Amino acid sequence: MFFHIVLERNMQLHPRYFGRNLRDHLVTKLMKDVEGTCSGRHGFVVAITGIESVGKGLIRDGTGFVTFPVKYQCIVFRPFKGEILEAVVTMVNKMGFFAEAGPVQMFVSNHLIPDDMEFQSGDVPNYTTSDGSVKIQKDSEVRLKIIGTRVDATEIFCIGTIKDDFLGVINDPATI
Amino acid sequence: MSEKGGKGFSASAAKPPKAPSFPPSASSSGLEDGSVKSKKRGRKPKKTPEVQAVRSDAEAVPSPQFGGKGDNLFSKGMLGKGVMGEKTASAPKAPSPKEPIPLVLNVESELPNNTKCLMDSEAAQILEVIQEQMVALSEDPAIKIPVSFDRGLQYSKTNNNYSDPSAVRSVIETLAAHGVSEGEMCVIANVCPETTDEVFALVPSLKGKKIALTKPLNQVLSEVAKLRNTV
Image (tube, rainbow over all chains, first blue to last red; front, top):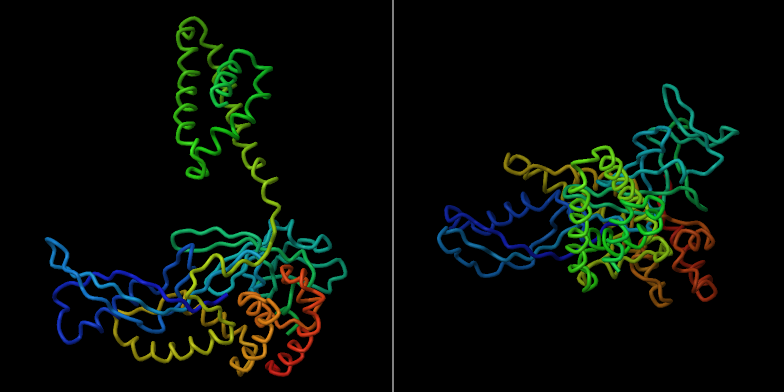
């Protein structure tokens, strides 16, 4: 889910940037530093939407760098346990399938795929029901529920399930 | 406890049959707690060193005998490893009874207060504006558009079910009066369920309020369905 959130960060700026454009430099550096990062608490910082305030700078002893506390608004994307997401399947194998929802990667193990869906190997590996009416393959869109998350320094990885009511394929590329 | 476990452990090196009976207690008290959930109870910091000490004990005790019986030590070493393996194997089992896995969406408690949940369509609206600005900024080689921005934008676009997110928000916020949290409202809006049954299946935390919620939810769903994009 996306969130709009206010975060704070201490930005260190080199003295060469001091001048009329100090604020611009701060914002540029903030964007460079923060956008695309990921933390367990806040998730992926997708984009900065605004600067709330730039506090008073503090000169660091011995270096000449100045630290500014910057409060900024940003849009973050964080998956939650229990959340329902619509994800695009990226890879299918006999262990299950991988899917992607925005910047988040997910895995659905074959234990969490309905029992009536069987793995079919071949050029396009897929999970298919016995009557062939439902098929999960690469680029299928599935609605899944997140049951677990693992946070890395640079990415969030989720375990999902489609073994529940109202979950499963919502859009099959083969039928379009 | 851990000392006993420890003795059991060193004893287990001597008496193989006893080995399996001790490890679970040792694992639950010493190994797992000490290493995995380090700072929750006060007793742990004491325990890990003890266990380590005991372990080094266990290694130290056989060494005097080592000179004579190399085979024996090897088998003991193996045994010790076996016990360790058992410990680690039994470790994941221990916490599972404590957690009944209530898959309840707990958005508010996990994020700071100054947070607003966004529906995908709202996010898409904001991100599209930012993308336009990014195009201007992208001439500056110092600024790279991060991958997660593109992915986030793409995701929000594909899940952009409503052309007028603010109208959807005003409709769906009527549910707040019935005790639906912001996170739950956003999930409902993102998923576009057709029936109340679907809502209760997907957001189990609302099941408790099923009777009170069915009627207002029906109204909201029919309103939201009207606002939905027809693609």
